[in-house]
Length: 428
Image (cartoon, rainbow, N blue to C red):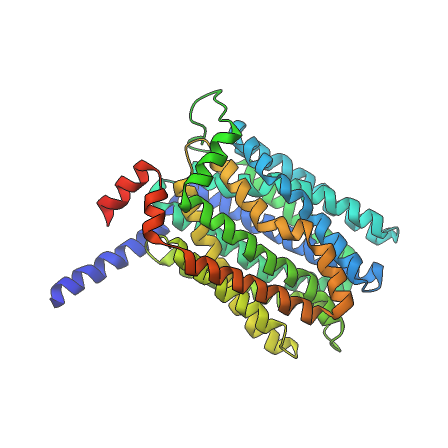
């Protein structure tokens, strides 16, 4: 028995070490370096954009909510963006979106330096950069499948999540320091520089295969939607993503307004708390990539409930330090959900439709950020940001609890496609 345990331990350790073999792929290493600078560009820009809105509007809750909404409202078009990645070269789509993102950061830096920034201009640039992200996000999520082998796909997604969340730590923290010492314009310039470096690394990547079933084939959208509706392994993560995104969008509106009312918090405190969420997310991505196999819908729903309850606790925290501790847990559980949900979706996606499924996930994740944040801002102005955050988190926790209570593995196996059912019966 001890020898059997020792062999099992060596086998599991070898599998964990082999999961890092994806880093031996030159294309994946370049993609990771591109991701590092792309995400630094993204988070530095977003932090500076939100705080510039706070300054221009005089901490008006509706103005902050409006600009946040316009950043994410175009994400409702992400399903179409994923469709572009299924029909055209994903690498070329990413290169084009990166160029537009750099140009947007340079425009924001210019208007901030010249003092010509206005709320309508901030709204317009939020729409432009949000539209770029709507095309970029699903294609970027589906791209690792074209440069790594299937057996290390989860490791690639997990490492990608670590890079994303690590940039979420560094980007907002750096942006907060730059805003305090140099102004918002310096933050935008640094974001543009990071975007240019990301563009250079991305240009050197050559995919080993494409995700389309055959040259010139176009899969109808109704085929993808029918597959999602009939397969619980696709439908459940998408429904849960709606609730996770609702909690996250409320945090994005409530945090700057809460910190604006805390003495000596300011932009530095805002950047620090966003970075704390990213630190927790990096730990969550590392944990998810180290665990062998994927997590089923029941585990995903449990992560969802814990994330909503942690968001509820954030609303009751009195200071920046205590708020940061809870936000670390929020980031950890949120990334556990995201990494496992993305892995499951990519494994279950039909051939040639990975970009579309990733696009549907992005739409589900950002639907509240795009459509609900102005109303969250109005609610925060009427009852205060803390009560608004607490009520929304409680609603999401209850909805997640209902998903967890009514999820039936037997019902899911019965509803799964025939091929998936046979695979499950063989492996169970």
